[in-house]
Image (cartoon, rainbow, N blue to C red; front, side, top):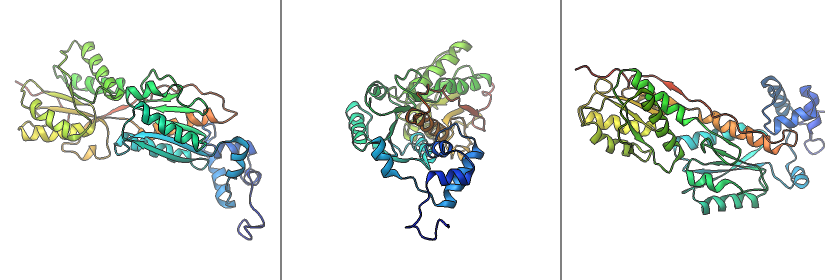
Length: 342
């Protein structure tokens, strides 16, 4: 019988999907639940069968049996920032077709706001919660916040007290700093992120590691707030100093502000000053000059968080350990060069 002949008379079930795809009932369940241990070819076959049959999971029945919905809660801070927004997209993309994503975007990741968001999700019987937690206070709050549902943290450093995924920000800062030192610069100045952000703190740590390993002088840390404006304002003073030939900006937005400040102060990039950013914004290759930067795959990080959470939720997967931090890599463009002679 055709799946479209009489929707009231016949509704495909999971066994129909398994039969059409030539796989087991359990494999279909794994695809629907976003389980990572399914080959791409098998997943494609199951998704094609789902589309052909018009199969829709019986969400109401599942909720009655398990007491949980197929909704995942995501708590994020300021999703207008490139990193959190890209991670959220990666989570939503990986969640289909088995789960839906509900988002709580907070103006501050303090203890009270986090607890309120988690409590709201618990009241909605979500299957699990992902918290994009890049601030140190938030990480300390997370442990024990939702003992009745699986919880995964994203971007919370290397010592999180719960399952987590993260970028190795220390290694990324080492890459940026070492690149400038290898070009022959005597030292590297840094426009850092806020100290309350773990990303900012760890990028300072990596910068220091590279300087100390090379025996290079360690300049004062100059802290911005991730915005292009802060990079510009710090850059107006920094670019006036003739001893400054290399600057590592802790994100690309601050690097953009610094590029403008350098131009206004008559310092040419990279002839007079080399600049390296962090993030690899989609626009970074269109800055002038095109920006050398450290690329981190936020979308893949979001997908990794989703798969780790599914590993906590699914009965057959058991508790999964946190994966190793994802390694960023350096993208060399035209904003970095050897220091000026003489």
